[in-house]
Image (tube, rainbow, N blue to C red; front, side):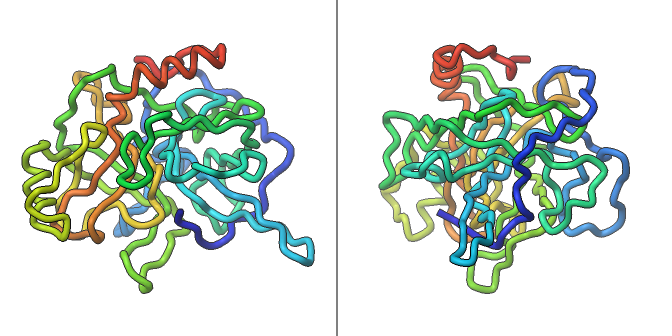
Length: 299
């Protein structure tokens, strides 16, 4: 589990921004919301660019009563009351100690055009075949006490159809993870984005076999690969964060094809490994149905 610096105090009372006009799932705000950062921005995402991005935080109360909110992992909003993340991020955690934060951008300030929103967690659902030893079936849902209020910086991502395959060179991963895989790495205060190509399965396996995994490594069916471009990679602390790609024929609309799971090193030529979201679409639908909720992530 990756943890880092504290975030500003979690608001106990829900923020209620002016409701936005819904236009469907997966709408990326390419130019940001309200303003646009320009120039060399070091892979910083625009404010509100990925409105489905969630920060999962754990409340830690110090001896003097000070409340710190420790960043645990990333996640994505797939329903106003449900967050999609990696099982390794939340397995064994007490739901009452966790909160989900939507609409966050710069974790070091609350002086933003639209405020972030925090919601308490009431239930964690992990896949019954999750295997922590190798992170097989590394998927989980977080159920919230109350729904998020949709706003320009808070919305849901689309999900792919069961069993569908995505080979796209214009995908994006986002998160607040470290910029290097070592003690020298620093957690990011502003949400970062990395453009990544999906990597065909056979090519990914060939590259992974060149690493310490060895020549007999086999990639489990619950994984897909992306990246393999030097200097562009998800890294420590990005676990649970979404990998999204444009929906074919709808370049303005994005679907989540992966969840950050694991990798060998960071930012090298070896592709990173992500949870294959399309493999679990039926499982997600089943859990949503059991919760008596609607499928909001269908495009």
